[in-house]
Image (cartoon, rainbow over all chains, first blue to last red):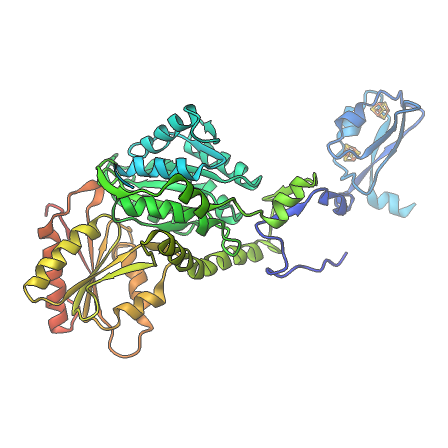
Length: 100
Length: 395
Ligand code: SF4
Ligand code: SF4
């Protein structure tokens, strides 16, 4: 995405940013490996949801079930896969995903 | 109202009258009394200030930064190693455009450890984005810190500011000064102006991020903004000085030119030594010698053009530097004056540097007389005899 960069007179004074600006920054771009969920193995313990540093695991509070990964912000660190007690997340290289 | 106060008492009294929202401080000789006396004012309920007793000067400045960022009027005081420990936070206050006001009692930096006056501490912080005001006496220290509030908080400036006194020489010596009434000080400083982007969004409950990572694409723009604050301070400092004069009768500019108009030789000096030097000027004038003095009050921003203008008519100038710049050339003030004079058309004054008074070494009338004689000699020959001499060191 091409960003129009502000000149010094246009910027708010003193390095002040509006809150929530990280929403505009799609960290999913960084990913080389993506977590893929294997529903058959999942026991919905939500450990992946707790462990994810980017809030990129979506769970459903009503049903108490794992829902999906948010690939806009999942940076592919693999922590969820590492922490999952049931090996219900596997990391797949993005190039493999693209081939499919 | 006439009162007898030491420099530290005068700073503390001014702070009481200013009644800042937050003071965060850690004690250090010879500045300790400033915040110690002020903390008594807090305990006695004479001010509404939140006093934050912290564990270091680094934390003192950090707490002032947090308070100032949230829109509070924040003040502190320190010296020497304390200022050095604040170093990284000084740059953050400057970069974030926070109008923090600090009383600095100038003291030599270690090593060797020393508690007495020289200017190496605040001069070392000269590039941190802080405005710096030096004081000749207790009256000026008092007047400077009151004006400092208005200068720092001016919407075109929004930069932190330090007003200094010479350690022990001013900080611990009793002088009579003309103190203003509490009401007069309060109406002169007024309320802190609301910083539009910052305080408003906080008040509206919108979260903001302050001091975010700023890489190749924005850091430069923000530095340019801070520099603009310094450029604007060139306009604001004399404006506030005039307003202060209108209300209280004492006017302040970037520097004081003392018997300079027809002088052949002059000395440029900062801080308390200017008082002693004026005495020498008077004596030498009585002997028919055409000598004068420039007392530099504002070290940052540096009033290069005005200084060049004021010094254009003299033949030779001696700079008295109360810090060793470790450049193997001179003290730190000398090259800046030379640079300022470089743009003068025609014949420029000869400039020689004199490093003096390090670690509180006493500077006598005779020392200053010696410098004037040296500078007068160069004024006669029209030639620079040398770049640097140390005055008052045992050879
Ligand atoms: S950690 Fe594994 S088992 Fe637990 S909810 Fe996440 S994917 Fe399912
Ligand atoms: S790979 Fe990392 S960022 Fe992505 S969902 Fe798992 S823990 Fe979160």
